[in-house]
Length: 176
Image 1 (tube, rainbow, N blue to C red):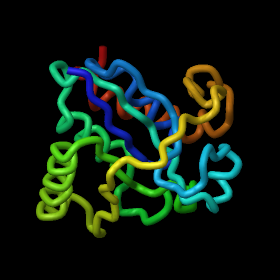
Image 2 (image 1 turned 120 degrees about the vertical axis):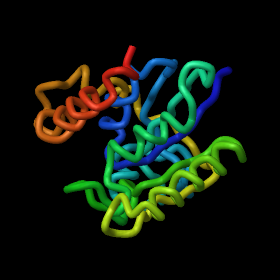
Image 3 (image 1 turned 180 degrees about the vertical axis):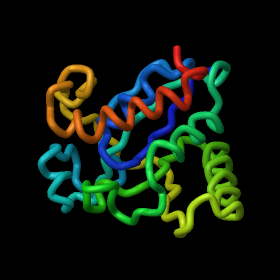
Image 4 (image 1 turned 45 degrees about the vertical axis):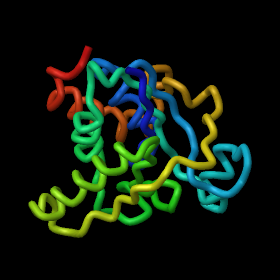
């Protein structure tokens, strides 16, 4: 069954590069969600004035990969305790957020977040927002497959590649 979930975990290049090879994932693409401006540009979102978050839309076959499994990978791929940032990417456009597409996804995300909080997986509180998807716009074409197409980019070398390599080691059995 085809489903979608939209995840914000810092730079959308990282999320896309990590999730695109997961078994059952049909498509991943960078986008912006949650803001107030129609059709924002990357530059506008980066300025932090549109209210949008850099996100990745993950389209998946739920008979092959579950929402729970995707969320397990999501919680791993970023630090959900950093408010309005991921590492050196600072601003509300990099906040940790799960944009759910159904009440079932909302319940699963909230349950997962509560469990991680109760188990004290992180020393600091989890600040990840769980919100209904709204004001969603695909990012410009040059952002799609950015890591794959721009491996020489310094940001990709210093931030994206180490994150993707670690993700691929930890979740090797879930990759196609």
